[in-house]
Image (tube, each protein chain N blue to C red):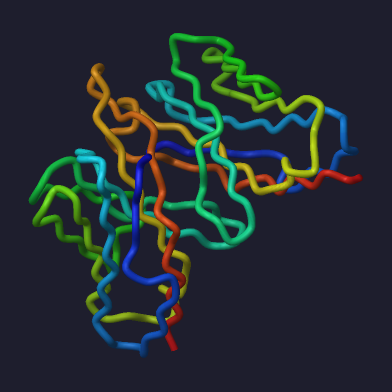
Length: 116
Length: 113
């Protein structure tokens, strides 16, 4: 059974703080993704990675960075948290299918971040 | 980039009736279309997906249809049950998802007893 875990379910931070959100998957998936979910906006892709040390910008990368030092771990970093980054953050992972695309994306439980 | 529109935002149906949720996409190169179900307070879970070389796919009470010419795809749930109540998201992606998924804004499905 695929397991994607995130370091915290709830997090409260102050404006200007540096925030680290961590995601770990145990299925040896190549691809990992960070999304944020806001009411009425659905899920939006922030960054993704298809290999260790590799990263690609998604649709809304501004104000975020990522790190992938090990295959199973993908970190999202808010360099200087702002109130508009208050959101639910969801990590996902997937294989690369035989055709070169990805297989099913499996999601973690989410981290609800509040920036005061 | 890809843009996915999803309708309706809220859908209320009587238990036992059918529910249909529709999505359109903008990028004709998109080739993978998953549907996720998210129950309150839980993570999104894949319920069905379809690839661009297939027009329809069915799994028990759930089916998805794809019209590549019109660039739209739909989720059909028959014989709805209370446990079908949730938010449903469609998504689309190029290269099977190697670039991440572009999601619709979601449909809150309410099953009335």
